[in-house]
Image (cartoon, rainbow, N blue to C red; front, side, top):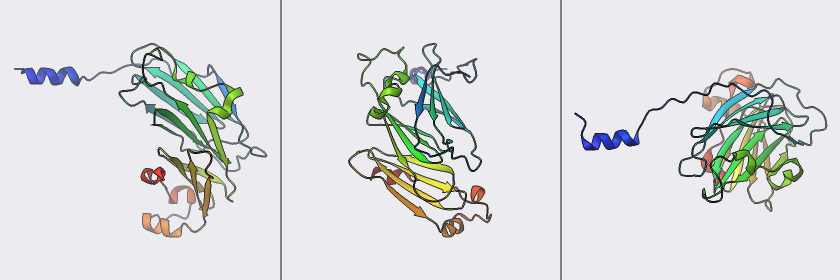
Length: 241
């Protein structure tokens, strides 16, 4: 017997499976070239590809959307899918002369979609301001329309060129409302910590930590291989500073 309370719960909580028949889009609808300020192609060590999904939080205009992304070499491919409408929008960020490291991050803060992409030579932040109501944005419009074209890249893109020594192999990102924090791990076993404020008037802080031995001992890692001996995560709570 299903009571009234049970029925109300069932109306709120419903399991659903949605199938998307298409796989990764081979040719994106739009490509934005992003300069990295690298003097030459900086792929001096092998960089692994990465892939993941990002779901927009509930309550916003895009609460039916999710993004499927993957990195291949110097390119970040992003696809937009909807649970309500049939759409298959795609966008590619092409970072010139520098491969993308594992560690790409999507987040929503202060009504803005924040995309942070670590490369071997620099860190890049893209900010797209989200509409606050459906009155100003139709539900069939693409999230990618919030990013301008290549000619106005400076309006939604910021970057920092890494000056510390070493060959980065991966990164960990923590995004807060006031700053982006990143920790880069290099092939030599060094750690590069970057504090990138949202306020452009504030300077970006970059700190090189050469001796990571104590961190290895704390984490109980016994291998001397820097690629497998250390897994570093930037703490989200510290990103608010």
